[in-house]
Length: 293
Length: 345
Image (cartoon, rainbow over all chains, first blue to last red; front, side):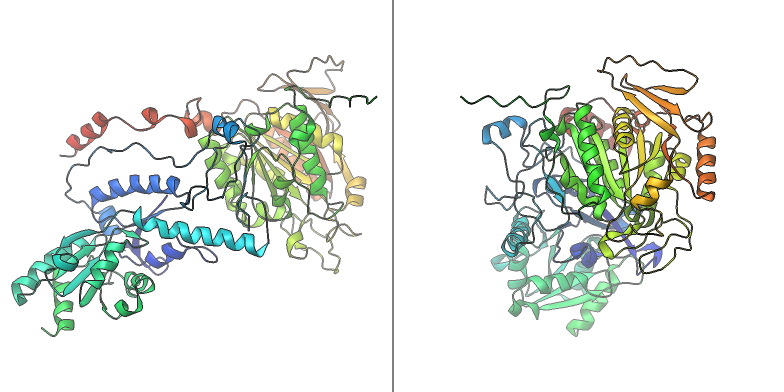
C-alpha cells in the first residue's frame, strides 16, 4: 500500500506546492505490461477511509495499491466531519493454513481455482511441508516455478489482466455529486474530477448556475480502474468536462484509454497546474470560455 | 528376500537431509555458488532448523538465483537489484521468529544495493546476509564489480584500477554483530561459520569468495580457485558446538577465544593470528585494512558481538509475530478513535 501525496513536478518541481500529476506514473509504474489500482480520496475523512480500503484491497487482490492524495489535502489544515470507526473487520484475503494444506494435499500459488483470478497464498512460517512457494520477479507458471514456456507465461499475464478487470467492481464507487446518469441527469453537460478539486468544482457549479443559468452534472471519481458507473455517466451526457490539476490531462488520458471510441470525443479538459490549489473562479471562467458563454 | 533399505540419517529434529535440498542448479558446473548452497543445506540440516521456519531472500544476479537450489520447503522472495535488504527488513519485522537467510552477490550488494546494505547493517536485524563474492558480474559477461581487488585482471586483459570495497570492514564499522569471510572451496570453515551464524542473534554478514569459473578463474584474477588456495589466510580456526551437542573438547584456553552464543551453543575460535580478539571492533577493522594494503586475503570470523540489542529488541516488538497477531490486538478500540476525534474538536 503506497500513499503518494502529490506535489508539483517534474523532478523536485515546486516542492511545497500542490498538483495531481502523478496519476499516469502511478497507474503504469514498472516494466512491461503493468497496471496498479489507484484510490483517490477527495477529503481528509476519505483519506482515512480509503486508506483502510486500500489495505484490504492489497491483501484481497494480492497487489500493490496506490492511494493518491495531494499536498493541498495532505498538508493543509481542513475542517472535517469526525472519522467513523471501521464497520468491517480487516480483510486478509485468501490465506491457507496448515490444516487447509493437510486437507487439500498442497496448492498452486497462482492457480485460479475460484474464478476470481486470485490464487491462494500461505504466510511464511506456516508449519506444513507443502506451505512454501517462491516469489520471483521473473516469469513463472501457476505453481510459482520459473518458466519461459510461452503458454505458461501468457496464461499468467492473462490472469493478471483478468484480475485487474475484476477490480472495477471492488474499488470505491464514484460519488454522484450532482445530477446523474440516464433519467437522473439534470443536464446534457457533465463533469468529472477527483481529489482536492472537489471543493472548488462544487462551488464553481453553483457559480455556473447562478451566472449562466446552466446545470452541470458532476461525478467524483474515487478509483482506477474505472467503475462501470463512470462509463454510464459519460454515455449519458453530450459532453464531459474533466477537471484536474495537471498540464497533460492525465485523468482524461486514462478515461480515453478506457472508454469506447464513440465516447472519447465527448471529453474536454479544464487543466490547472500553476502549483496553487485550483479555485472556483478558474473553473467557471474556463467552462464559460469553452462553452462560449 | 529383499533387504530393507537402511533408514536415512536424520538430524536433531528427525528430518533427513533431502528435506533441506532444493531444485537443480542452473549455474555453471564448478561455480562456487553451488558449493555455498550445499553448505547452507548442510548447516541448516545439522543445526536442526525446521525448513518451514526459514525465509530465503535474494536480489538479482547469479548469487541471487541460488535460493531456488536449496531448501524447497522454505518460503522465498527474489526481489529486484540490490533491494533485498528492504524486503528482508519488512519480512523480518512481520515475523521475527523465522531464520532468515539473504543471499546476495558483490554486484547486488556493493554497487546497486550499497545504499540498502549499509542501513541493513546498522540496524542489526536478526538475519544471515551472505555475499557470494566473485568480483565480477557473471550474468552480464563478467565486468569487474566493486569488490574486485586493485590490480586484478580480466580475461580480456583489463586491469582493475580502483580499490575493492571490503564489505567485511564496512559491515563491522556499520554495526553488524557477526562478520566473517570464507571461501566456497573451504568446506569445513564455511560450514562451521554458517552453523555459528544460525546460532547468532543479530545481523550476520558473511562475505564468501566464490570463484566464477566462466569469467574470473584465470591467472591474474584474485578471486580464482588457485589464488584462494594459495593466498587464503585464516585468522582463526572455527570450532562450533551446537547447544544440543554433548561434546567435550579439550583445548588450551590461551589459544582459543570462546564465545557463548545466544542459543546456548559454543563458538571456539582458535587463534591463528597473534592474539586476535574478535570482539575488538577497531582492531578488526584495522586488521582488515592492513590486510587489504598487503594484498592478503584473510578469512575467518573477524568480529562477533553477542550483547548488542537487535532491531527487534529496540522496537520492543511482542513475541508473537505481527503477521499472525489477531485483529483484536492490532486494531485500536472505538474508544481510542472517539477520544482522538473529541480532542480535535
